Length: 179
Image 1: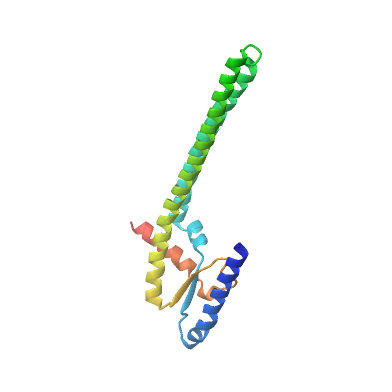
Image 2: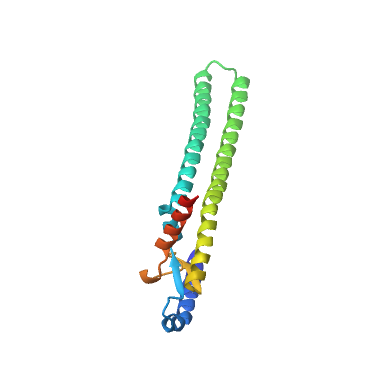
């Protein structure tokens, strides 16, 4: 299914490129541009700050997960040590409690993953909003009809002549420094 979707994206990108070729050749200015959003996120000041914030949250989450796992492992080891001295009913109760603890730990782990996904969406979403704003401004100023995201699934090749990624990074950094 993913291959099918990637093929459709490729065909659409190629079709648009072929249809736009006469327009591009007829003008002194390029009317199509490309931006590598991932590169903008990796190299711009705000992108690096967003990644740094996410890494801090990931490290905190790793500590929480490690704490939960250590607590569970300690209780499991204690149960193992006490198995020879506990009655069968007491042993069963402790195993049940440990099973519930394991389920709680798994739920907590899932909650942490969801929390990190939301944080990623929020942090990267802020950056993407600013990228979009700058792309629109640049498109308006330079007369671009289309700006495509450089993506291996939808853009097979793009000339560096139409790549506006460095200008986007520069504009984002300037905007950040002006604040």
